[in-house]
Every structure is written in structure tokens, then in C-alpha cells.
Amino acid sequence: MFFVNGIHVLNRLSRNSAWKMFRLQRISNLKNTENQLESIAVLVVEDNPDDALLISEFLAEESGCEFSIKVVTTLADAIQVMGENDFDVVLLDLTLPDSTGLDTVRKIVGRFSNAVVIVLTGLSDAQIAVQSVRYGAQDYLEKKDISSMWLGRAIRHAMERKRIMSRQEELFGDLTAALNEIEMLQKVVPICANCKKIRNDSDEWETMEDFLRKQTKSAFDPNICPECITILYPVMKINKSK
Picture 1 (cartoon, rainbow, N blue to C red):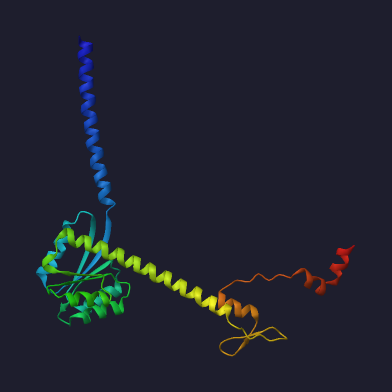
Picture 2 (cartoon, one colour; picture 1 turned 135 degrees about the vertical axis):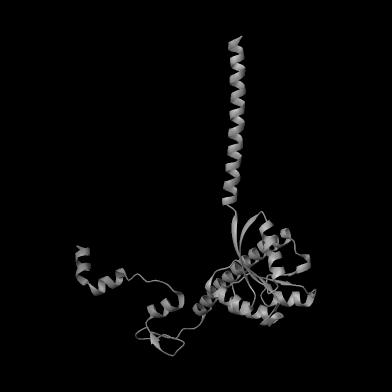
């Protein structure tokens, strides 16, 4: 009987130990997940302290990301800190002490073309929203419609759109360069009938190697073909014939 009861006691202890281990593992997994949260640096350009506080609180409530927030109240301060630090996204109010309206967007995007800008405003104006995007902003949000979930989602979507646009611009640049190379190679190239130098677009004569190196970015590996070997080194030809 004691043996049976002993087994029951051991089984009960084993179940308790397993449950504790499960809870500890779950807590550890949650901590690891928190440590792996995406970190996003946000610059809030807002002169209204209540709005700036509300935005910070909304971002603090967002569970999908860890936001690092910097708040400035003027366009001049925004330009300064953006020049000194890297931000993943800029939340930009259009009514600032030193700048108002769409000119604020132009000044930010004009100086920092890679910035992910989301315009925040208390105005309900579809025309301003469209113009903001045309001037380089990634999104336009009315403050009265902002919530923690909506703001976090808008930030992630704006960053992804900017990433895709940057990639498209990079591919377009590569394609343009390739088309320019093809156009250059297809055109009539003036070449000296004697020394084989080529006249470039600056009306200067340069060797064929230099011309092709500049136009195609190719690297050259100097070698001597068999025919030239027989001309330059006739002894090698005799030895070879033997």
C-alpha cells in the first residue's frame, strides 16, 4: 500500500514540477519575444504638448513594436536633430511656430529625401493630404482619427512603402545606366585608322582600353594572343615548330 501511495505521491510531485517548468519556460519565451521586438526611432515634430503627450502614449500602448520617441517643437529643431541622429519615421505637424502648411513638408523632404514622413494635422482637408504625399510624405493622418493601433500600423506601412519606393528608384537607376551603356556601345565611335585611339565626347583621343574602361566600367586583363606572340617572339615560333 505504501508503495502504491508512494507512486501516487511521486506522480503528484512530478505533475507539479512539470507545471512549474512549463510556466517558467512560458515566462522565458515571453521575455525573449519582448527582447526581439522591432525597435523604431520616431521623431515627433509637434508644438502642442497635449498632442505630443497623446502621441507618445499611443505609441507606448502599441504591443507590436518598441518605439523610441524624440519630441521637438519647431522645424528648426527638427532639422537639427535629424542632421545629428537617424530616425525611422517623422511625425510632422503642419502648424509650427516657425513653419506652417505644406512648406513644412517641402523643407523636411528637401533636406532629408530618405526620411519617412507622416503628416499629422487637425485639419480635415483632402487637398492638403494629396499635396503632402506629392511633396514626399508617406501618409497623412488627422489627429482626431488617431488611435494606438492605427498610428502604429500607419508607421509600419509608411516605412514599408518608403523601402519599396527606394528599391524601385535603385532599380530604375540601374536600368538607366544599363540603357546608357547599350546606347553608347551602339553608336558610331570615331577611331584612328593608324593608332586605334578613340575620340571621346570631349573631343580628346584616348586608348581603346581607357575608353572602354570609362564607358563600361570593365576591368582588363592584359594578355598576348598567339598571333602576336609569333610576331613579337619569333624564336618561340621556331622552338614550337621543332
